[in-house]
Image 1 (tube, rainbow, N blue to C red):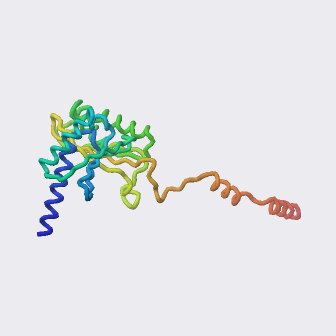
Image 2: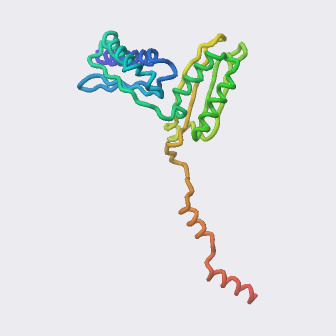
Image 3: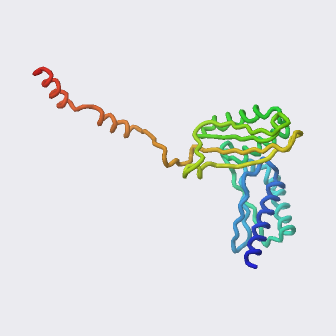
Length: 224
């Protein structure tokens, strides 16, 4: 019985997250997190457009809060907005933007859409990025296309710090799957070696031969 309750609890939690994402708009929400406190449910919404999500005088948030109480029977839900400053490093936002662009412009322009997104992430200073598109692009048969740049590990501890997300765009030809992986510059890579001025001076000190040794070598050559 406890297992069934836990599964049902997770299903309800997932339904709340999906409803919040869909109601606030695709391409605006990166993630939805729910924290359970003694006071009530704290719903943290990560977005790069807080003004559009909140609405005038918080109208959208208030209506969403009241609906969550009635529909999902939450005791005291409180929605908190977390602003994303660098949207170029958020994989979910980029994946949703690519999916929306495919729906708006069509699947024939998938290369332009992917390269524009790749260039924008690259110019923002990301260490690595990978965009994967799968679907009828543009032929009748489904294909997979890969657009990548920079440093992006797939295995090991470094792969855990890569931000990954997926989305789907509904086009006239069919559904196009979008997968995005981004390694932002603020992430710490364990196997990365940075050579600064101190390391350069140490290397120079090791490589350079002291003057005493140089004099000894010249004298030995003259004797010979």
